[in-house]
Image (cartoon, rainbow, N blue to C red):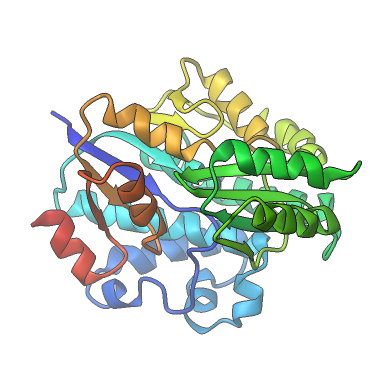
Length: 309
């Protein structure tokens, strides 16, 4: 029987050189999973995550397979160690693909190739340097939305990641995002931080990428997950495979409703959050969304002790 646990899977920004190295020393399944991904990709993904160069790892068509592989490797290790089966899963942006693999909806090899292409489509949709993303801290959601409306001036800029109370990410064309940051500060934002990303995810500029992803998804075999997956665009699980695919397509140009997603599972009695991936970002967000939530991350040995203790 599943326990009152949600497994959450991080998206871009969690990658770093040396990720999972501490755990890989004594757990062959981690490097075996990376070897499986490398066979699909045609290059040594483990070497890239351990040795870099970091600039290459940060290219979105490399970042996405690396993070998905890290999450799947940790999930396989969790199952190998007879970890408790979670009641529900959710992934932030790219992490949604990790959740769909780990819940049995999507084959690992298919997902690796799919997110590689997703990254390529995203890079090709917006030329380097013309798009941007920024985190706005300390404003209500409505204030951030208002700042974007005032900053647009005919360009694209919008609130795209509703991460937790007081933290919203905006994305769009570079000049419009810069204006949005200024507007947010004028409205009292504590900070407005431009993010080191190569593409402006989850905004209208990603429509061309979404069209190409839709064509690719037609050929991907998918089934309903055996563990429920809360999807970003709806903050709810899909009811059909077709709806899962439609949500993945819409996710490219629609906001990530992370705060609403976590709030919805808290209402269903979830008491613990375990982050399955290379980082602890979602653990921090989830704690801000619901302070009584017990959080842990599987990214290192200390996190495993907390998750299993």
